[in-house]
Image: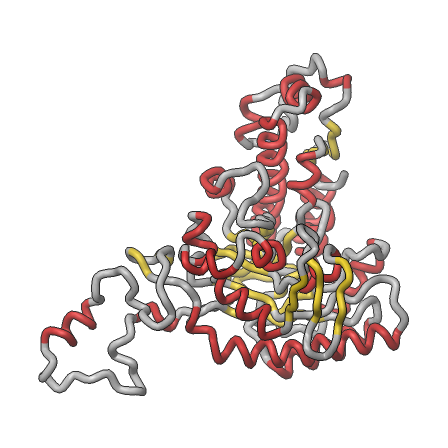
Length: 427
Ligand SMILES: [Zn+2]
């Protein structure tokens, strides 16, 4: 079993659950920091661990262009390459192809695009996007989809949604045929960090007890049978999990149809894509709420690319289990900090003599140690440390917000959930 999900408690539409992946058990609802190029900008992996990040994101488009999938695969996939033993999710590359690259040409087969780095020409199809994500080796990978632009007319949204549905089926077919090529090798009790060639799953490791037994007694009658694969180590049945993506623009009927078609193909988890693309926030919420109704209750639901602290609490209350957003990290680098008392722009002169902590209600290592005056000075002086400390606080605030959401669901306190947590994170 490479992925299991269990809903442990529900309050209204909100739910608390446990998602078990090959590299980590994840408590949901979960916020996933974005590590675009195998790095959550400005924060090292050991600090991410201290902050309690259970799963982080990598962007396939960026990693494919630089440093390249083959090199990462040889270094043990993203886990080995970046020395991160908890869970990772990669996106399909679709969103970045459509938002970052120039001169893209789309047809049934896939999309040809030019790199935003050097203008070189590349091609992504459902198959090549799966191949790239298998090589990167994240625990959870995403079907290749077309992210429909906003606004778009209904004909265009329908055609795009149908293309995504056909690509989802192709993504799954390729994944099922190639999922055992993931570059994981088990080291110790429960970590998969070392590289291994697909053809030799034991890689550089000692033979497993089963293998030793088999090798020591070649004539004992023990033979690997096709049914039990006795020569294959027990961990070898661990694979990545592929999630489907619901599209359909801002049209509720098309979202419903996309959900149904994606469910027909069948995935262990479902994502809602194509939101936060410029539409009003009220519309985002409406589409999320209506799409969730058409997703299976016993599978994880991932809302891609949202949002503010207020929004992630709101979406968790609607029943979303997983969310990611560049906002906490990107805003931090611009001196914009999320606190229990609202948004703080640390560059302001009024903080120059402020000896208080950034957020008196935050227990993060930055708020425990440094003053607003110092953080303001670092930012005004363009010190690298400003980016580091600001990012640590913002991520801590997001992760702590989700921790409090999970706690409130456990206590079954819907009123407190909404009135306390939600209002505290409003900015
Ligand atoms: Zn803090």
